[in-house]
Length: 540
Image (cartoon, rainbow, N blue to C red; front, top):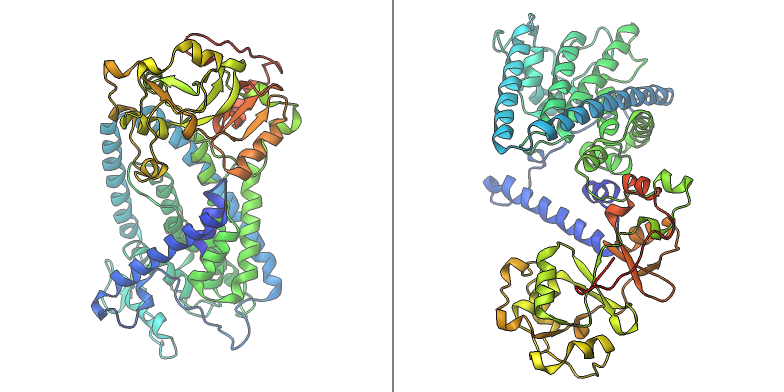
């Protein structure tokens, strides 16, 4: 469910009931696949939920009461603010690094491979040096009779690197050499509620792990391998949160004033992840699904909100930064501030170099147009009425018609008849059924798959049966706010711009609504366009 909300909150500029069902179905299939593969050894009997990613079982340490006091919500907000600041620093550093990569590395596949090798060597070297530099071996907890099985299993997972096996363990190695999910559970569930209680990880070990780990994550995120953000953010944030809890317990000699360090580790993990991604609703649900404990609903909500507000003071979320760097035309929920402060109309933003077709067109003209540009949709204009919009035709439909040779004979009609509008209701080319066109979805033919013979170039292609005769349009004098809302609410990719006579004067795509495009449109006048019908049927 958290994944569905994640796609809604961060990954989609248009949402619908159908898209909700598709996202839910994908999440269900993913979980079913994990259940099947992870439980092959039990022959699909009772599922072992420990094999799936989770934060372990959170138990109340004081009976029916929660693991934290009400007044500690203020401390959780402070942890959230610190996590938001850490996330802002992470995003700023990764943004500058990504810009450098795009200029010097991503242009060459060989350089990307070399970068992956060098980063792997550096990360591996640092990961081995850090435990080696930790000079102290810590005794294993002995009095664990009242500990849960989960805590006893975590004790067995402690790594005795350069220490006596069975008696001691290396604190830093236990965080680096174990799996990430095991390290997260260690930070969440080892008991530490005061100065005289078990302190599995010291403040120095947590700091020595946290700072290099989050620095390495900054360099790794964005290289030429699939590298995620969730687990590194959770692990580094858990170390940061447990460090905060440990320092608070150093001030609490009476033991019990503050919540256990595992609770602060959970808040720290949420704050750092929220400070990087700037998500609230989906992260709250994801973390609750992983913890399975409803007592943390309010603390997580407050921590994530504090992290989001603090991070937004300095920069945007990491996903938004990478979307902008790759120039992906993603429309945010709100209209860009530039459009709110200036009076911009659709006529200023639109592209006037519109590639148009006639309702009945020569096959050669259609083929040449498809090869000359990569547009996804072409307006169909009635030249007999001065360029009145007749409809639109998609690129996939045109390629399919050319591939299936849905042509009429060259002598069936003259160019003068097309220009004068003397077409009549009779179809001039063989009709291709819609199920024939759509059955190849999504693998529609491309223009490279189409070969129009010289004898077919003068044949007529009747586009009237396949045209969308009621496309969405906007008047050239419409405000940019209205245009933006049309794209967002209807999930549009393009929008035809017409004048008061319903003549096509331009077209708007999502790229035209980006802040940089809107800034450039301010230099244009409200009627900075002209419409000319040339021999190639291109309106400019």
